[in-house]
Amino acid sequence: MDFRLRTRSDIPRCVSTLKLVHSADRYPYQWPHDPIAWLNPAGSLIAWVAEDKGTDTILGHVCVVYGPGSQILASVPGIGSHQRASVSRLFVSPAARGQGLSLGKSLLRIAQTWAEANDLTLTLDVVDDGGPAVELYERLGWRLLDLVEAEWRTPEGNHPKIRVYQAPPVPAPAAPEATSTSV
Ligand SMILES: CC(C)(COP(=O)(O)OP(=O)(O)OC[C@H]1O[C@@H](n2cnc3c(N)ncnc32)[C@H](O)[C@@H]1OP(=O)(O)O)[C@@H](O)C(=O)NCCC(=O)NCCS
Image (cartoon, rainbow, N blue to C red):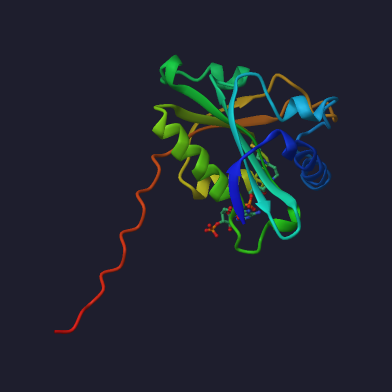
């Protein structure tokens, strides 16, 4: 698996993977009119992909947006506006989940590490549906800041509840195991 910065030539394959994610998870809730623009939300700073070189497939994607990235995140107090950034457009191909690849976790960690190095505090918002994304953020120790009602409606006409999270500090790399030498 190759984790690397996204390039322009990755975009068509990112859209293909996003189609699979949308069919499986309704993420995004509604298929965007312009999926390429959707992959580049306003304020995009940087994006990464997980690529399977063997099959030439993009299996995962994440980007970081400068600023709150959404109306909901803008309303969360306590983070200096210059330091604010948000995780956006995180998805992993359904075929690459549940096999111990941990692509979602790895992509999030890459985004967190980059944000820390750039003195940015990451937040994100996620629909409170008890789905794999909420599970992932909880397992990785993201801090629940708020639970709010979305302004937008689902195709069924409901305003879903949205969870707002802040990134935890990136865990220090594990120390190498001590090797014993005989004398
Ligand atoms: C959320 C998503 C990116 C997670 O990707 P993933 O590659 O399956 O996640 P990982 O395998 O790295 O999961 C990390 C941990 O969460 C656990 N996890 C993942 N999905 C889970 C689920 N459905 N139920 C329980 N645990 C789950 C994994 O077991 C793993 O734990 P571990 O490291 O202790 O083994 C993926 O499910 C996805 O693309 N969902 C649709 C798009 C979406 O909702 N994006 C987020 C928008 S805010």
